[in-house]
Image (cartoon, rainbow, N blue to C red; front, side, top):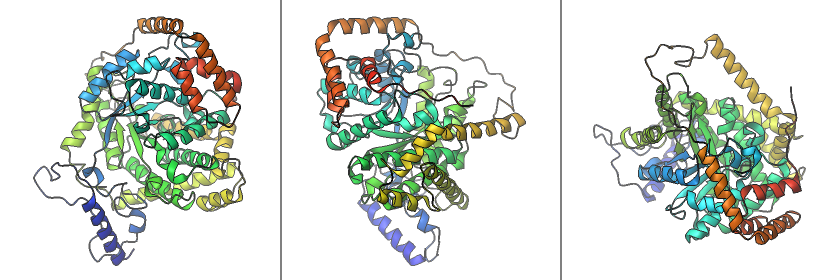
Amino acid sequence: MNSADISAGRDRWQERYDGARKRDVDFTTLSGLELDPAYGPPEDVDDPRMERIGWPGEFPYTRGLYPTGYRGRAWTIRQFAGFGNAKQTNERYKMLLAAGGGGLSVAFDMPTLMGRDSDDAKSLGEVGHCGVAIDSAADMEVLFDGIDLQGVTTSMTISGPAVPAFCMYLVAAERQGADITKLDGTLQTDIFKEYIAQKEWLFEPEPHLRLIGDLMAYCAGTIPRYKPLSVSGYHIREAGSTAAQELAFTIADGFGYVELGLSRGLDVNVFAPGLSFFFDSHIDFFEEIAKFRAARRIWARWLRDVYGATSEKAQWMRFHTQTAGVSLTAQQPVNNVVRTAVEALAAVLGGTNSLHTNALDETLALPTDETAEIALRTQTVLMEETGVVNVADPLGGSWYVEALTDRIEAEAEAIFRRILSLGGEQGEDAGTTTRAALAAGNHKIGPVTSGILRGIEDGWFTGEIAEAAFQYQQKLERGEKRIVGVNCHTETVARDLDIMRVSHEVERAQVALLTDRKGARDQATVDAALKHLIEVSRTDENMIPAMLDAVRAEATLGEICDVLREEWGEYREPARF
């Protein structure tokens, strides 16, 4: 890009910056030096990289979505929490919000994640242990008691039974007196990554996609600020993928959901802003920063050039980040505070929109109140003391960071080509190939979706992740990669930690409570609502209203999922060797 075009871009950015709202805080250095809100090439200097880098708030959004960076709005501190019963988790939420948290993020227990009630025989021994137990809308009411759902953004990390859990959240908000059309938050719902990495599915992919399509249509028409899908790379990375694999598999899943929306006749400019992303921030500092910058650029380009999005918001990739749980060590666990701080800083310098920081003891158990506070304070120290909010994309233009961003983007594009080939499409440029296949109408949903479904069926994704994890483990065992306290610097004076333990009394009390609630409801109304839900599932009608009626009647999560399992069957992953 020549110097004249760069100068024109700088002027456009300055005009947008001047017209944007900024926070009323001090943006000078610790020593009082005045700082520009963003930096670029020197005047009268040509820089061909600027075509791909751009200015903050401008396509291709490599440098962030907003001209102000964090001067306009800092990232949201959104700590992931959930344990025991709804009352216990409600108390943790209130502590986090009072200590500076900007939003809630719900962690569910394993029975809930698998669409099972607490009194299900398959739930024995698991209730409340890795998250909060939620059986019905009544539990959701307790979970958010005293918390204004219309005034706080709420994220829920659940995919298989995401839609009935979402309906319980809506009913809890209704019972608070909230205007549900004004709710704001994120539901994970990303079923592709379940088949690829996390393994928390209920049905075959197609019924899940039916529910997701209904949810997208419902939110686009009824709750415009709510994001019905958080496309998740976090679990892919935690399963052992490389950074480029995490990026490519996640964005490809996002393309699949775009194709799903388009196949439903939805307007990409309306539903695409409701798609958000969830990434891992691992320990390789610069690789993670480059990954985040490449992600925004790829998404913007594909949404505009391949899927036809014309609005800025439809081209934006908004993403939440969590520091890498898999990087935490049981050995010398206090060192995990350092790891988490470095990973959080990478997420911030990469322009994350919201952030969760892991607690130092999470490799051993759920966080205690003390370790949860340390994790939260890691973010507030970064935000309030380090100056990282002062300048938008402060590493933009770094020779190393820009080269690494380009390298990761190129690796991702190669993976997109491979996914398209799994779906029967070949071409040198993945975007061009996808656009042509969409125009030809060769696929029921879309070409990327076809490749994803074939890759799931063939075990290609899980094989690629397993190979990456194996190669890394070999390097660890040879000492080529090092983890402090594990294969180097193992000497320590550290003592064992006091860790949090969830009593089995929680399970007994939750089962007793569920029994009482089932006995107090109108069973005929529940049965009629569940029957109607199945009748709707056999039509093309949107299933969300019927599911809401079942939830209002106090049908449980397990009951709703069980009638759908009976109708659609359960998915069994093929054995592979």
